[in-house]
Amino acid sequence: MTLSFSGWQVLEDRRRLRAEEEPQSGRAYTMYHGTHLAHAKAIVRAGFRRSGDGLLGAGVYVSRNIEKAKCYPLGAGRQDKVVFKLKVRVGRVKKIDRDDHPLQKTWHQQGYDSAWVPPHSRISSIKSGREEDCVWDPRRIALVDVACCADAAARRELRRMIRGHRGGSPGGGCRLCHGDAAGRHPAESCWACGRAVCPFQSKHACKKRRPLQAE
Image (tube, rainbow, N blue to C red; front, side):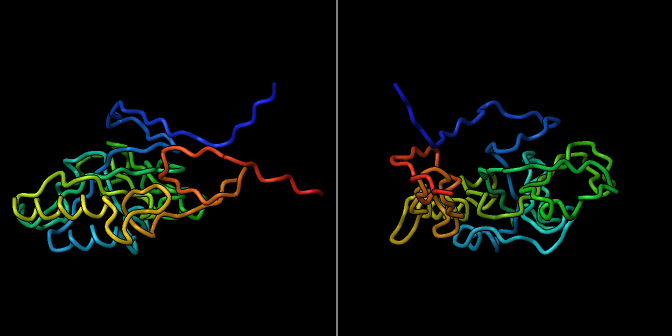
């Protein structure tokens, strides 16, 4: 008997990583992002934008440490801050743990999807000692909830927007994984069957294999 199968099924590690544990490439993790209340609705509607520069270069800055996310944006009052809870598919991860690291701002150019600064690293600008992450492609980040928002009315409105966005209003929701961020998830072709797939799909099974090309 011959069996043929192509595809995948995502198995997520539900055990929360400790602060000092390095994220594993290809996994999905809960992370947080702090922003100004004035920008929160735009993020829900259009997704995150890659920053032009920063400690780890261009990308979207997030953290598994919610206390670190609560510090941002720097200088804003508590009433003006929002912390989003996220699901982040980190892809290929590069650890950056010192000021003079040769890939500190060029990790993406070397094929990495995310950069990770471990806690208590030898990076002088991180005074808190808390871990930090930078994700190159905003499409790897999915909004899950509002983790912190002192303005109760704004918190309810943002949560309503997130639910509506993920629920698939007309034209909304990724057509492949049926998640949020309509039209912004990067579709790829399955190597075996050629069908369009989304990296946020929980599983994919090839129904018919693409015929082998003659050499």
